[in-house]
Image (cartoon, rainbow, N blue to C red; front, side):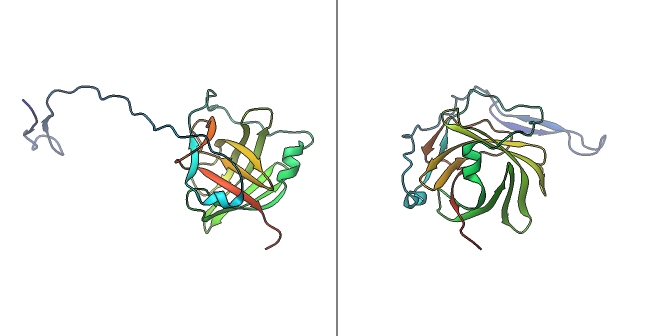
Amino acid sequence: KSWVIEIGDATRTPGHHGRYHVGRLSASRPARLERSEPLQLSSVEGAGRSDAIEGQSRVEVPSVPVERPTGPLSSAEQRLQGRWQSYDFASNSRAWKMTFDGREFHAEGGGDDWYTGFITLRSDEDPAWLDFTIEDCLCSYKGTTSHGIYSWDGDSIVVAAPQPGKIRPERFVQNRGDMLRLLPLDGD
């Protein structure tokens, strides 16, 4: 048979009873992402291009809670302190207002779209890591971590941070999502 729907006797149990024949099945070829050239970080004007992340990290997302870092702030953490406006790389539209106070972060997207938690930086990795552990929000990401990468570009910082639960990107490249450029806010 190729494909056929057979309806059985539905009076004996609630709902429907029957069979759905789809014919012969075979596995499809694996999906493959088109590779792009690595992203070249340059000026703020570049934020309007459709640039983003590609690739998967060799590091698996931990299933245990991340411990809050302690001790003095690194030079990268000190440089990140203050208020930032983020811009989506693909559309160059304003995305999040972010505040970093020590290792604490607060991200506000408007209305009920906000997150608080702490960051963990690893500047000894290539590319450098920036993880956002979410301690409070009004969604299902509470208690999860976004495993991202970052790079300084003059006074701005470029961050590729996928949704929590996804693995860390290996590099910045064009034509995908999840990438932001953060610019310092002088005052609001």
